[in-house]
Length: 212
Figure 1 (cartoon, rainbow, N blue to C red):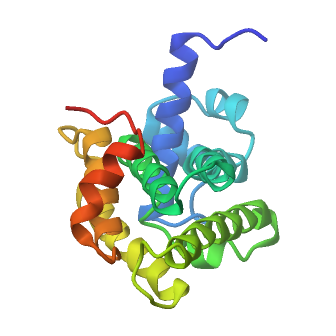
Figure 2 (tube, rainbow, N blue to C red):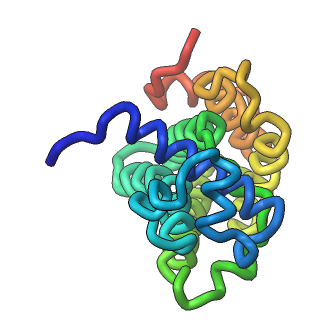
């Protein structure tokens, strides 16, 4: 398979960035290939060659947003070792990925969009990702590393901490995504540890290649 040229790759990013911005600002249904092309400063034919429909654009954004994170969650769920370390590794990598992404999918109404039949794969990926994270949280509780609390509550606590920080920092050019990912993952994990001071040990033994 021939790799796309740098120019083609840049055009894909440009079109998808524009589409994600329009999905957030004017809504998915109001976004058309013509509107995307006009905003991106390219011909409609160029956009259509890459993405024949706005649904195709959204699917590409979904794959980017969830594909890598789901792969990491699958890998860490199947890995050996304490669940708290595996959960930390997953969170650090996934947060860094989102922070470094050129696309922001936080501004549009995903709650209603994922209910549409055409976005069933997105819904299934989100449900799978949640089940994997929840399983690691439950294991960390059972192994005695997390405090005794309902796994669903612990999972939502981690999610809330992360989403709040991502809203603040994603898209900032000066953000060191890897460093922020590691720090934010550590903060989320620390909040649930029976012994919060163990977080440094967990970060060391998790063997995540952290900057600095």
